[in-house]
Length: 546
Image 1 (cartoon, helix red, strand yellow):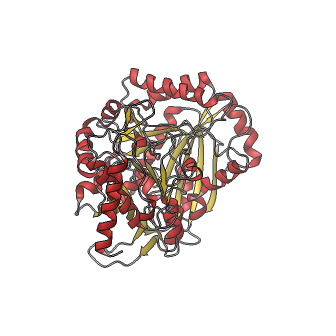
Image 2 (image 1 turned 120 degrees about the vertical axis):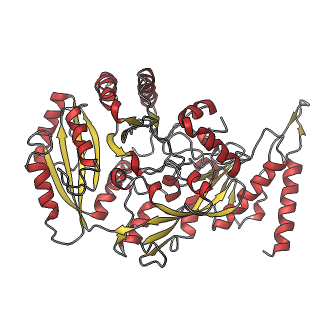
């Protein structure tokens, strides 16, 4: 479209906004102000959908708890479509500043949120980033193995709509890969970077937001901005962990490293929580890496094994040992599983076996004797390990069910209190927990405090992530019961003064969010005013739209 035509089209559309948002008389004589949708002719044919099929699909998420139907759904075929939408929405809201009703916009990737965070209000537009992935599928991951410039380290320029599995597939073909991963790879790059992106490599490489060199972001003012630690710095750090409040990520430059070929995957069982957490902390210690007492590991997580009848919920364990493990969990009611991995970069590498010997056979870790298990896997198989479980749950109709998750960051100094007060009291007493319960430590110095991500305020080098990844049926009242358990856990933490912070947080009021952000709140508010002054982005977070 020529510049003159663009200006004229914009003028008429904004005029349409003004006309259609003037007060209109209802039959009973009262005045209302009802915003209308953008002119669908301004976008490519079929790009802006208002039909029930499109809006209903955008009205739910992985949580299946919150349902909020938008006015329209944008199916972008290019970044330019997103720029147009945000430009028009911003200008409209700016001209109608005295109108309490605001056009809102929310980016939706795989919609793996569980509390409606990726939804727009009934007067809003959802941007379906999966449509952009389809349009740019063959060009949304560009790997540069030998870059020019002072860094001279490989990187990938990745569309915000790309899935992390797309990134892995593309980079492995060049023998490189990102260093930090979430457990589930079928999420969008923009989605995880808007939260933090944590997993078993975070203790060593930081979250995914610590591994970004540069981004392209469409801000709430409708501007497409390139930002980095040295260019538009405030936007760069605002967007990382910013919960979608400042813009929509359309490109991220991700740091790459040599890719392992194979992984030695290990699980060790514990009956004592103190021994379990002590070994985890020893393994992630910076002092341990580079010739310390214990061998260096490349991945570390932990989880609970609860006695609720049946076999251990994992095919990882040898079939012959399943009765022993089931008996162990039944006897103790609660068993802790330490999971680690050691990477191998060359075929036939004996380093993995030697390190495993030092860790497991020589008794340097305090797991239960006879309950150490290992297997070999390709790097791809290990990283994409959750996918097979997803496929199995889909086949049984158990994937698209309520997921009342609760994810927390707990200070290291209070993890023992959390273990006794939550795991051994609330969880065992209620005996309703379904789905994985994760617990593992991370090093604070791998996080950048300039980002919007929120960590416990305790001045400690280590903190734990605890994730209750519940799933429940629709009709048995189970998810409400799990919500009550979540509430009891939060009340216990508050009463005990633990100083926990929610990860993937959900609150209902601005006041609650201000408490959550703590010392970061004023900076967060200032950034919102700078990059989304109309407060139209990601209303489902309910930070400024409560």
